[in-house]
Image (cartoon, rainbow, N blue to C red; front, top):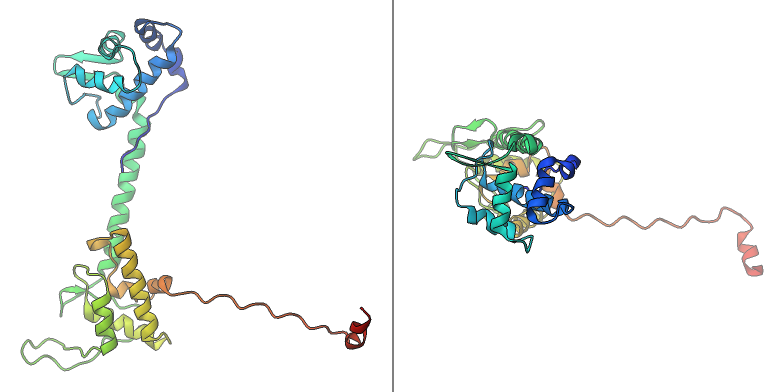
Length: 268
């Protein structure tokens, strides 16, 4: 997501270059217009200049177009004023936003921090989703604490790999679950059985899958951002977020403890 803000310090209004820019724009007292032009150019520079402030174009008309969006003043004259005042440095290899790293240093620090947080979260989510590898299917199949061992089954005669006889309810649930790469059917089944052993019913678990599938479709969730089935039914109980909550029971009216209440009601 792009950031549409820029750092503006209160000293900018009294900066000598700002006052000079206002004067070149026609009114030395209109520093607000000068600051407005600077802010517009800086915001545009977030996508069109590197960290050193070098602008990705040498065409002054491009800058003039940016300025024309906020003022009726001659935009080409405003570009030349920015250069002559020193807010834009014209060098042999191109144009630079003056002291870009100084004026926008805090923005870059925040941008870098958010990127590091995003990468760290992505690595953590991938690690949580992946778990140890299930060699029989080449897919992750972590076993949570308290969950039963994998379903024992005789090996397949053709492949020699373990074969699992899934229940009809799980087969229907598997078809309804959102498609995700490397989603282990057998690992998901082990977690599914664990939740059944705790007292959940097949209908409840199917309802949770249908609700989650509807959310995935509604929000456009794709690929690796869809939960593994084993994570959905794992010990963290992610599926529980998609079960309908029963409405709270109405509080019972407290009965009177006065033994003479039945005789006094008629006199009230």
